[in-house]
Image (cartoon, rainbow, N blue to C red; front, side, top):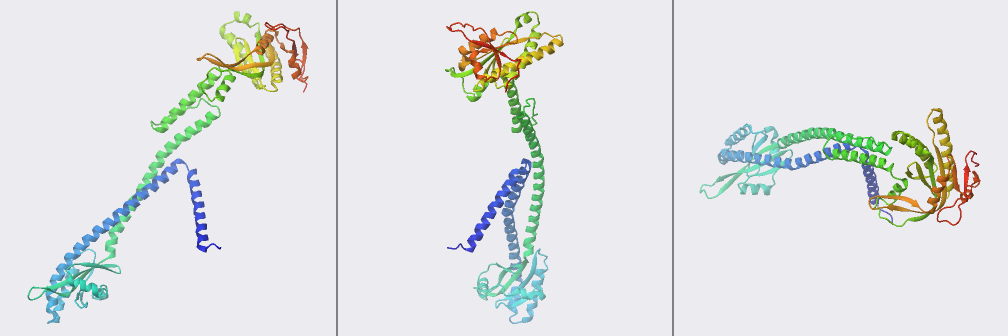
Length: 492
């Protein structure tokens, strides 16, 4: 069954309208807020004024029409009364009809605003007198015979539209000799041009639309001015947010008002302050703890059983630091230890390690995953080489060099939240941690000591030297250990 042509056209029109509307919505949504506010205010003002004009203009026309009807009623009653006797006598003396013309002209010359013409007809609808002899054609053919009959029967004014004129008719009646009934002699008419009614309304329309245009211009300008100030504050907040996203936590937005935007600026500054504080606090919290909090979504940290995981434990310790600390000022101690801690921390993190904690002059770090052992050993090798280069520079500058001993172990550890309700940490404990710490204490300055079984995980990438086994408390069997030789290049 074929689709009617009109249905196809309607479908095409509707699809086009939807596309146009979607395109307009897309363009409008891409505008800046100041333009959106200006457009919305302009539309609202236009709609309000348009609605106001729809309400007030018909009222003004009704008022003008009633005033005109009252004027016409007075004119027609007076004219009817003045031409009644000449029309009655003209039946005997036709020359008296000139008096009717005189009354018609007198009425026309009363300078009534808007009055176009006046005429009088007899009861047979024949024209007797007209105020404008050249326009006598306007004086007939408006009222139908039945309307004339009703008009002559009732002493009441009626109105009809004749082209561009509004005509008002009134009967001319005379009492008979017995004063018993009224005799219809004819009717009189006064006419007003439609321009008389339209001109005031047109002036009112022009006045309304002129004021509307002025109000729209002023309103749009004011809205644009204030919206621009608002948008500038929003742009400033947006720019500051981008800087915060880029890592700049020193940015600040100056509140310019006490309204919602000012409150938003103050809240933004508070947020940046809290972020800055959080970043500073994170420096004093292990990354394991931070990651655990992020993974838990910041939920309440209650003590719970830990997870058993295979983890590579890394310990480093600065040798003979206690002796140096006894001979130096506290400020010098902190400055020096931070230099060596910074070198080690950067290398540990670069090799995928997580710094667990600082313990005096000692560092504890974790390496997880299948490559944990190799990453830990690589980090240890790079640390010893970096410390050796750092010591050469310090020795050349006449400064005291420090050396580092490193111990590494791999095994099953318990990882979880530990501490009290008010102070907790996320760390690892277990035999593997204790042995790694013991290996670190055995390592001499510039030495890397690992459990011997770890060498099988290095795939021959590093040279090593076996050392004498060690005995650990609560262990029946000794622990085989070895030293990693980092003076040889890594075989890759």
